[in-house]
Length: 369
Image 1 (cartoon, rainbow, N blue to C red):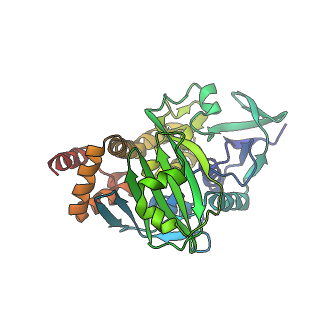
Image 2: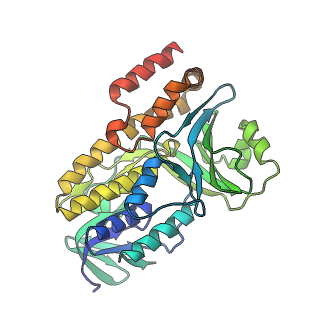
């Protein structure tokens, strides 16, 4: 039997490790289990919005230009229109996913988190988990093991079937960034994201409904991007994954809680996945320290509401070329409006996000565009 932990986290992705760090900073003893071994890779756009950067700072992690590339805003464009918005509060960072994982693990070890790598969980009960032939007793069990969470299924918190699922692929290229913006290029049924992740590299991420579409073929839809990359070389292999919009039926049950994608997942088109995961992690640690998971359930719902609305809006743009052209025409002709929408989208606090009435107002302006 392993040592008793106050908190046992299943899953050592960013959400799980952030939860472990935050709980340790509250004075709780934390153990983390994962069947994988670091570095843990994942297909990802690799852009950290200001809210994510602020959350990392609250965990004692201060990013710098040696670990990533600071970006100052976002640009949406298609074959006709383009709109840019600058970040007004804080700074975003493009950071390779493997590098982010290394930073999180290093910080977790500094604050006393115990990691158990390469062991698979085989069972749960009310007092802990069985993994790798060892029983890990705990007071609180946290599922940070993705949208198909084993913890969620065992605790009857399983995610609802996702509203929509798409396919994502990413790869790094050796090219000097030509902008300090994250660029989102809209094409027929797909988007390409360009995120600077270093002084001499960018991350290209592709999202589409077609599981067979890869970056090289998709570039034919984006001649501007293809021209930028024509003399560059890939630095990494192309990684793939699934992205979707979905949420668990509930995020707590007794002494069990879900965090990150196990609790709520937004399509990668929003770029908000890690921001939400880190915010959820900090809220959960606060609730664990006060032995009040109900407060986490309430706060989780509050900060997830606006990203849910924004994701649905962006997915509507993905499905309808007519709507996408309308929206991008409106934003291109009204830069102040685009800046307001993006500022709300990247807000560090839920109260700064677009309210439902503002979303309806935006919809009316789109129809008139």
